[in-house]
Length: 275
Image (cartoon, rainbow, N blue to C red):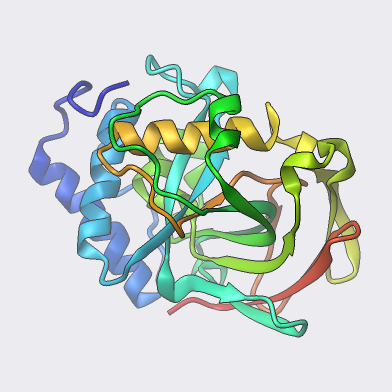
């Protein structure tokens, strides 16, 4: 997929209005009853909406969430994953206590938590390399951390409507909680990286690194490739949340999530109203 290809409809002004609608809803902590315009025809166009929204959002991008696209929901690009920005003000360090995470569920939007394994680049990716294999990605040095993605959007039906809608609204991301480092991750067997998610004391999902199709390295390779093709090659220090390791778990304001990463640490979060 090239960013120079894809649908020309809706018009650029229509794309800008979609981006503006999502940005304003997020700023005001309110929901959107429907997708604000015509759903982009393909992922190329959806990323154009995302880029316009990033330009309107007064914050620095410090990383990217990766989300998996089911086979039946992919478009002509063949992309099996998607990207969404993580902003500096919505990056929190786990402290050992409970981290408040802002979600749009109180306003009628979507909210969920996802256990994540998070990579942090230790070197810039080459600006002229557009395609990465998992093996090549592993060779680009990065640290690995445990984390929790705050998956939340003003649009309650964002996941139902599919990947083009998810991409259009910041990848359905509203933050990342970063936990402890997993040392020497490239030497570890991925089946031993296990995780469990609880909400209000009830186990809602189990899994780990092998829950990610292709594993950590495949997610890393996709993030490097897609970012480069968008003209945003990844830089030293940027984060990559590699995908949900135990599932996507709905959460409401006031509920508390506890994510346990076997042998690597726990992260506790409490959902609070966004905005």
